[in-house]
Structures are given as structure tokens and as C-alpha cells.
Length: 583
Image (cartoon, rainbow, N blue to C red):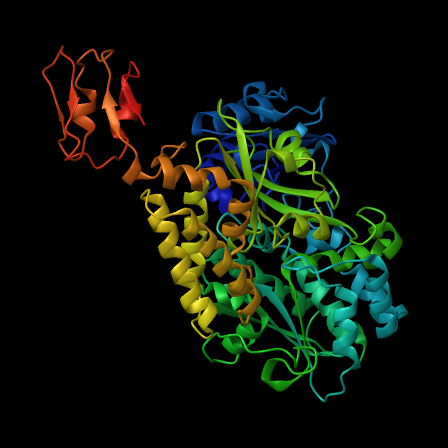
């Protein structure tokens, strides 16, 4: 019997460490021999902490566990061999909707293998692709296979991966580098972190194959220091792979050598841009430079360099093992394979999903994610993080591919997907994302440094009910100029949340300015809390008010002193009879 505990960052945050302590104790007390191991995220972050049991070839998934549930699982399932159905989130006799439309390639081992045990990876066919490449293929053959697969970069605009490799391979040099961009900084994004925590060897194997194809012998994985578990498992994986001969000198007895280093980043969002990332690896301040020359011609330490992100590298072994045609058949005509998304926000089933490219937003958000949490209606989805755009309900049937999303005003980005409902204000959403990118600007070019600041100031005025229609047009005009004239991808995409909210939610900007009204009741300067005649005088609001702005005797109607009210919403939240109104 095999027992697997989800021990990625999501599981640990939900209490997996406490669950493990009790689980091990109860297993020892029971005297039952089991094959116990920690695994990465299975994708169902909404059900963490998760324990999965493989019993006679049948898989049982238990989720949302409390300490007492763990004891029950040991007592009922391990001792009596009867499933503890109260906490079964995936009964073996039925398919869970969350997985029904997913296709696992990048995530095929996540939540299945112990990411700190190379033997688990090898038993699943790990490093078979590298052995095939070194024993049966030439570098040019590998590049052609990647080209034919139609794999595109999974970290941004979707540049064809095989073409990128070809550029690096064609540049003559005595030294070449490979870089894995694991600097995942988008709010609401956790795809790369989860892959590194759940299946680090897939990334290492993909990088080794890429190095062989392009003629590189050294690599850096640039991972932000806020991902300590991912970094720990990467370092363990590198050491194990070196000991087994999959990394290091003369790999698998050939004349191919390849060394991998982990470089911890300090969390600057701009270092996700490839030229800024390279400056950071070199020990310089992370600031982008103009291109050309492109990294494939002149990159890290002035040498030809091939950069791909975590998810891109993790696709490579599957393509080599299964063939370019099999991979391309899964996606669309122009984009092969699958895409991993981090589902977050106002969603019932948040977590990590992997779907074939071309799957519609509706299928991802409603069929897989279960739709909006609570009774509110869907309003928009933010794709591509702060560099992406907000798409409204009428775009739910949009297929998820690079060209279609770009045409709609969003981008694929690294795969963040933040769902919003009718209680979200789109002026506030634009302000939130622009505030993030403005703070993360490196300051090198004027349009990004100053332009985003001016955009933010205008959005702040709108949230106060100030401004004019002419100012909205200035907002649009400035956003377009920043997009056109900024130096790097951060500045070029920073206005996307502004431009898409103007395009699809213009009426909310109009209401803020003309009517001093925020329909979502979020923008504090233009909302007012009042207590109606339904008030029963329970004093709950008085007790919770941080500004002491509510007056009234117990048993009588209370009144909010508007001049003192800080509009925190505490009274609205605690009123048992819903006697507090927000306008």
C-alpha cells in the first residue's frame, strides 16, 4: 500500500506539516507497513491538505483534512481496508470534474513521484529521452523535432522554441549557455514554482537536451529566493543527477558535459525579462538592454545563450519520448501541446490545471474550475498577470491560444488566470496591476518610469470620482504610447490592464467620473455606508468599528457619523440583519 502526502507550498500552507506529523505517528502505532512518501502538488490546491492512497491498484484521494480525519483514515482505510468516504474528494468509481478536460504532460509526475528521489523519476521513464538523444540523435535532429512539435515558449509571447534553439546552435562560439527562467513574479501565478516543487528532474532533463542541441555546456536556473522549497528540491535534484551521471562531465559515457547552477534572484519583477535576468546572473543590476543583439548571438557573459522558462523545458523530454507529431496533435495548428494555468481569484476550485491549447476559457473556468465561488456572477478574467488584460463574459468561448488572446487584448503570459466577479471594480483592478508594474519598473526608460506613474495618478483620480472624459482619452493615449515606446516587455505590456478595462468596461470609468459611483462599492472615496430602519440595535457594528464612528443605544437604531467613517466595511460584514447599506 502506498501513501502519498501533498507536500508542495500549497499543501504546507494548508497544514500538510501538521497532517504529516499525525499521519506518521498513527502509522507507527498501527504497525502496518506502508510505502510512504511526500509528493508535489497534484493540482487540487482547493482541497489541500491532500493524502492519496494506492491500494491494490486503486487510487483514493482524501482532501480538506483535519487532524481527526487523519486518524480516521488510518483506522478505517489502513486497518479495516474500508475507505473513509466522508473525506474522499475523488472516489475511485468516478472521474473528478476538475481533471475531466485536462491533459497532463508537464504535470504528469507532479503529485505522483517523490520530487526528492531520482529513482521515482527514473521509474516513470525519466532520463530516457536524454539517453535517446545522446545515443541515437544528432543536435540538428533534436532541433528539428522541437520545431516540428510546434512547441512555443511558455513564459511570455510564445516564440517558437525550436527556432530559438536553432539561432543559438548556428552562432559559432567556444562557449555557450543555457538558462532556465524561473523568476515567476506575476500576482496569482504559481505554475513554475509548482513544477519545480513537484518534478524538478523533468526540467533538468529538458535543459540537458537543449544544451546538447545548441552546443552549450553550462546552465543557470534563475529562481527567486521567495521559492525556498523549489530551490531546495532543485539543488537535491542536481546533486542526484550528477551522482547518477545525467549531469556533469562525460554524461552517460559520452563526450557531452553539462553543468547546472542555481542562481537565487532577489524578487525584482523586471528580472523576468531575459536581458535583465542575464545582467543579474552576471552580478550587475537587473536592467534590460536593447535588442539586437539577441541572447542567442550575445547573451550571458557575452556568449550565445538560450533562455526558456520552466514549463518550456519540462515539455522537452515528453516530445523526445513520444514524438513531435504526437505533441503537435494535442494543441492547435500553430501551437502544439498543452498549457499550465494557475487558477486563482473568485473561483470554486482554484489550483493548477493543464489543458490542451485551444481549450476555451469557459471550459477552464466553469467546467474545470467550477465557476464563481458564492452567488455572484462572473465578470472578467485577468490573463497574463500584470502584463495581461481583462476579458469580459462575452469572451468566455475564446480558445486559449497565443494569437486569439493577443487579438482580444490579453496575452498568454506565463499562465496566471485570475477570475473576478461582479463585486470587483475594474477601475480598481487596473489600478492594482498598474501599481505593481509601476513599482517594479527598473527606471531605465522614460516611458515606463514616468509614463506608468502618470497613468497611476490618473487612475487614482478616477477612483476618487474626479477627472473628466477628456482625461480618460488622455489615459488611453498615454497607455498606447507607453506600449509602443518602452524598452522591454515590462513597459510594453504594463498598460494592458488599463487598455482592456477601457475597451470592455468603459462604462465603469464613466460612472466613476460622471456619477461619483462605484458599482462594485470598492472605491472608498465615492461610497457611503448608512444604517437603515431594519437595525435592531444589537451593537455588533459598534464593537467592530475601528474609528468609533457609529453611535446608538442597545435596542435602538444606530447612526454612522460620516465625517468619522473610514469606510472599512466592518459594519457591513458583521450586521446580522443586513441593515447596513453601501452606495
